[in-house]
Amino acid sequence: MLTTRKLRSSFFCSPGAASPVLVLMIVLSSTLCFATRPDTQSYIGTAYGTYAFVGNSLLVGQTAPVTLGGTCGTSQQPLNVPASAAGVNLPPLVTGGAVNTDVSSSPQTAQASANTAAISLLGGLITAQAINAVSTTTMQSNGTFQVSAAGSTFNNLSILGQVYNGSVPANTRVNLPLIGYIVLNEQTSNITTAMAKMTVNMLHIHITVLNVLGLQVGTEIVVSNATSGMVNVFAPAILNGGAFGTEVLGQPLSSAPTAPVILPCIGTNGSLVTATLASLSLPSILTTGALANSGESNINENESTGRTISRVAGVNLLNGLVTVNAMTAQVNTAVDNLVQVFSVGTDTFVGISVAGHPEITDNVPYNTSVSLAGLGTLYLKRVLRSTPPINAVEVRSLELVVLENNSYSLPIGLDVIVGDAYINVIPDTNP
Image (cartoon, rainbow, N blue to C red):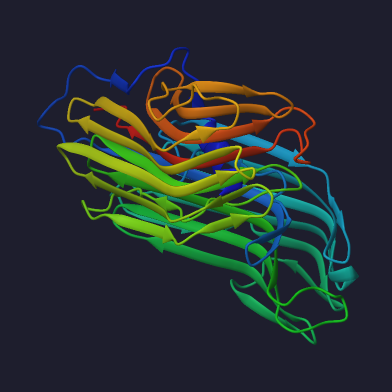
């Protein structure tokens, strides 16, 4: 997840000094009434205006994306995060669509909204004056959840001449002859005893046949997306974590996280979840051998524990500039029933080589940065932590940030990450 990386990184700052192992401890509460079960709540909210893709290829990035936190949200409330963006000019796919998005939390309520205005899609076959998505999740006084899409409306939506106004029944399908189909007011929700979540896509276009517009079969376009949710567990903390093999951030080059593993908000009950990839090739940038990422977590009344691991073999960055036989990034976290947080980040290399830097060996210190002339900065065994109060740790085995015009024709600002593991703690703030 590109956006995911930005959101995740917003928790962190670079540590001021290198250390062989980063150990973080927070005492968020010194006392606990043992007659009371720890009750940790988290608020989830995301929204964006427009988004288009085909398979793993991005056509239009999310416009005005906002979030309350990572995958499992945040315990903070009240909180409000707004954003806005101008329209997109990529005919015949999308034209226009200025957007205002907003996510918020208040006691026992999470809400997200996206309002997209003056948009034209598929070369004018679909137009709208305004498209508004609203998703709301609430926890009732008895502890049960309720989700709602109330407030989700269309203003002068025209599809092949057919006009829609106001609310439209959920998951209304409209066929687009010789193109595909569109789903109006697409709603998906999931409610359990521990969490609830609802996503609203006001327009979801699917290109299913060869067409005169020249759009690739499999193309999807989403307009006005809003997701809200809440998590409520009887545990000292919720652990929001994951691991991935590689990620490339930048324009026009980008690559989503490979073989990602994400810890579910309510834990894995101690079971290991894994994702693997036999090899990876990003032409002119990076090749690797096997990637294996894993994670597990256990969330109960007495403690919340978790670990995430990223293993990458056969790394070759920029045609031999950096090579590594194997690397492993790992984060271990435990939160006890006093809401004390213990997090450890570790990293190892086997057979690392950096051209022109014979001083770099497998025992390179944590948070080493290497200035590469005419290119940028190479980070090795990089450990990131959140600003106080400390509750998050991320380990990146290798990271290259391009800062200069270079012989590789890589754009300035390109960020290449190889081997990433992280855990963010959402604690019970009212034990």
